[in-house]
Each structure stands twice: as C-alpha cells, then as structure tokens.
Length: 185
Image: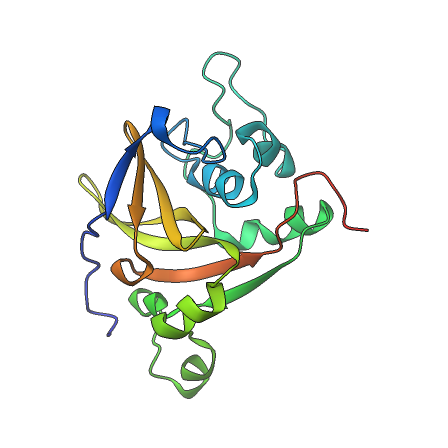
C-alpha cells in the first residue's frame, strides 16, 4: 500500500435497522460526532455518558453534542479517557500510509498490518479511525467501533457492519472493557 493509493468505498457485510440493533450500539446524532457514537458503542455506554467524558454539552432539542463541528482526532481521546479510569493502547495501522510515509524503517517497526491487527483485536473492544469516502468531499477520517469481531458504523437508518479486512484502518485505540465514570479498583 502506498501513500498515493486512494481509499476505496468499503462494502458493508450487511445493514441492520436501528430498531433491530443491539441496545448497546449507539448512533450518531449529527455529522461530526462519530467519535462519541463509536466510544459509546465500544464500551456499552450511552451517548450522554460518552459525551460527558469529553466535557461536551448537548443541544437540548436534538441531544447532539455541541462544539465539535469538524469532528475529533484520536489524540483527543486519551487524556479524557484516562481521567475517567480507562486504559487503552494506541496502534498505528497500515492504513496510515495515506497520510504518512510508511516505507521509513521506524514506520515499518510500528505500523500494525491488517492480519496482525485482527489478532490483536480478537476478544477486545476498540475505537478505529478509518478512511471513509464521503460523496461530497471525498476521503475523510471517521471513527467506528470494534466489538464482537465486527466493525460497527452508523448509517442513515441504522448500522453498517463491516469485516475488518474490508476497511482501511489508520489508528486503533484498544480499550479495557469497563464502564464510563467508574474507576477500576
């Protein structure tokens, strides 16, 4: 994979209507809150609990978070999660080649290839920063949840389920399975 290789449109394994989805899966409420929805879905938290971790207020009418009109970056997640008693491991994945030169020796040492990523994520939960093709703006960074062996993404009327090998993962934040607001003993 080279930096010049464009992200392709991923094909979901299937779509699950919101009414038929497990109650632990949380949908986005606006166009830029994918990190909140992914975190909540990965950790069995509510949208409100996930937003509170980041100190974000919500619109009283829509319930969507305010103050993230351009989305979030993976690096913004670490400190708020740690303050709330969570631990996680950040992995640089082979999809990062779209924004960085992964041919350098240091990058080759730290970039996790997709096959190894699948093994590292097995039995764990994570938030993945992926490339998603946007109809209007082209490639965009996006957050999805990893749990129970599948990638879960919010779509208009429900959730799209993807296989890990069908998407381009840039970063993965592997999380300990604990609840928001509860410090581990």
